[in-house]
Length: 289
Length: 289
Image (cartoon, rainbow over all chains, first blue to last red; front, side):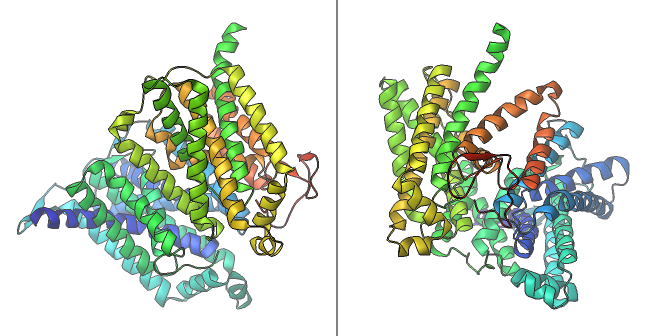
């Protein structure tokens, strides 16, 4: 029972990161119908941003977070300008390849800058662990969970309760009608990529700090899993993506705790195939492509 | 001269094998479905043939036929599974299938598990690869002009109309997926008997996306497209070796530029059929693939 609870707890930590990365991914996909293959690189940029901030600026957690998110935002806006804006609205494979190309460039660019081995991200807080009855949790894990929770709530507030959030949902539903009602579709698209980059960057910072390493190719697996989260949940409801992200983390932790850790990565894809066969639009529904 | 030959022989063999798999993917995609499972199909064929030649001492041609049969049957089943899904969801289901196959291969000790299957006898040579490639291209050319080819393209362009014209779209889609899978498996068998190692990582998402990029980059309206894409994109990183550290950075930039400048692929077919149109100026508002 203790092992079970501990695995659930660990799963929630990783799952919250999956959810944050997946949210940005699904936001961009639902607003622009662009499968952004450079999204994992926003995540990677966040981790390297954290590394740079710690090395050159400050060791304050909040400062590191802001630094990482700023680097990810800068990368995101450049990617939007170069590879998304020119091909938006085209057949889905075209933006897919364009962003893949930028992704490859970013990965190998990071490899060139920081070397092909993971760099050590120095710890920014003492490794204290707390015990909750039989369970133990480190302070860094709590911070990870906290940041993810704040980001998810903030995004939910933005999408549901603000003017621009309403415009975002309108564009996701029908871009042409939204434009006819005076929504600046181009600006909403740019804003959406910016937000998705900020969220992926924050996730990159927390993972970089949690595992104390940043690596040029660290985005790949996280990107793929967040992709799966979006598809399993469907992109219509951001709450759905959050829940599926958390569940995926827990499920993976349970599989690696009770079965074998090599099967861990199969969980996501097994779930994906089963769900898509029975609910092609995801569990909670998707916008039409 | 001989130095040049020792350097280019492996490159040309790899380019030939990649083109074979890409032509297989082209045949699958000619009836509509987007497949991100062709690396997995190639890998399955490679595994089966490698086990047959290495552990059971079967002759190479028989192993090729067995690998192709496995690719055909798996492709047929995949085609049946995704026949009712829309293009994107179908593509993602094949993605899930491919990743699951990779993880399964990773966990079977008999075929080497994580350490890959090794000790495969060398059976592939430069002439063999190009004889096979020529045969595959001939088959693709015949297929393009066959009743099945026409039925497949009609199914891709409008399944509803095709069905109304009396085309059995379930059969056409699953059969072309099977044929494409068999050709991909053929490429996989050749690869396994050339690099002498067959590992689970050859079956994953990123390898499949590579094949997809060959097809869409080259142009998916005629079999010259995947041939050209497979050749150019395999040889290009080698040509860029003059700046070995930056070659993938340049590769990514070129990929993005190409797809923005010429989203319909390098080689397109004039809609009435006939000779491929090289570097033509014809532009469509949206690009069907």
